[in-house]
Image 1: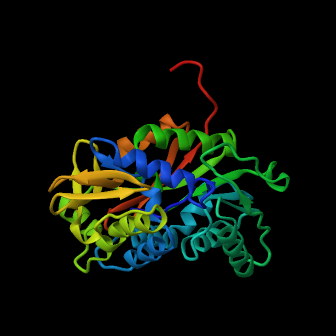
Image 2 (image 1 turned 90 degrees about the vertical axis):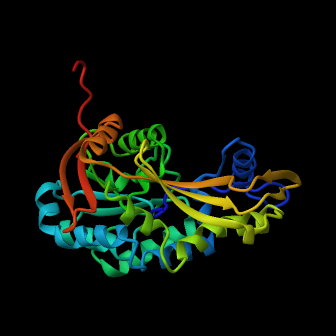
Image 3 (image 1 turned 180 degrees about the vertical axis):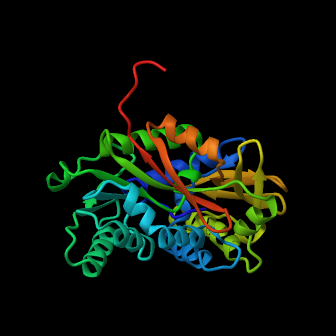
Length: 328
């Protein structure tokens, strides 16, 4: 569970149903281990619930990253190329993005997002806060190569990918995204990226299964969305939220667990779940220094600097797109 960015463009079928949502849900529920992509947790209700999650005591990542961005501004100014165009993958956070822009005095700001309305609203908000800063919003799916505006092509580039969203992806998907970012920004560009850290199991579980039940509602909201948008009949009250630590993959997993045997349908297709069977709804991978470095290197980025919050829970890494090497 992290700040979600870079979702696919919406394509509706003849009945007004999001094709990708329908196809992903039907395919995921048909697997032996039922699973759905984490991006579908974030409809309007899910996004609001996530905002609520960022305020609960147990959920540390947003506060920890904000602390780093607030306290390490002088370091950013020293290590980030002067006169850079900040290219943010996802429309800017109202809190985190201004902290970075204040620290480094960029030459331009380019937010990339597929949600046009949200993109334009957040770009207008940033323009109001920084009236002298050229802002060039680009509506695009940054999972693919993006052509940047002509006004920034000759400027040094700093990619900004906050929220540890990279942790929601399995390794090969994360590497693909990092390579796409490298292609968009070009050789010599820098990338500032949030990466949550491995820590004790109790802290991790609590962050994804808070005592107040907000995360449970966030997870169950997916079933409500399926029922509403895909003519589903999932008995939401029979599903229990569960957060699990998977040590092999170094990740927190969120599941919806059937508390008894259930039957339901989605888009007219019948499904069953036995008692204890789960729908795997999200991964949140955690990183050590070496595993985080390896992921970035595989994606074409060489780590240069790393900062953590005071409690060592979360990291922000600065990396550079070095020229390809012909030999080791």
